[in-house]
Image (cartoon, rainbow, N blue to C red; front, side):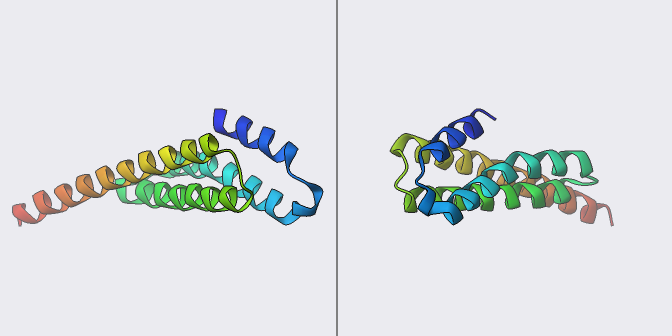
Length: 109
């Protein structure tokens, strides 16, 4: 949520002519915590949760792209790159857990 505060500060400085870019960054940045919360609340399986994590990763990468277009501060972009790496790592761990579960399950039969 701290990143959202930084995004809001950045967006306050964006010129009015960049109205579309403003709203695209705002939507994508807000969707990251929302997707993670929804995925956690609705997770009936690791696979379902992983799906929401991957969507949040896509939103984070989208924010990075739009921040580059808007010529945002390097440090803000780096923070979103770090977030994307964390989400990617989580998605990979969830994939491994799902794969391990499947292989253990198939070994029983």
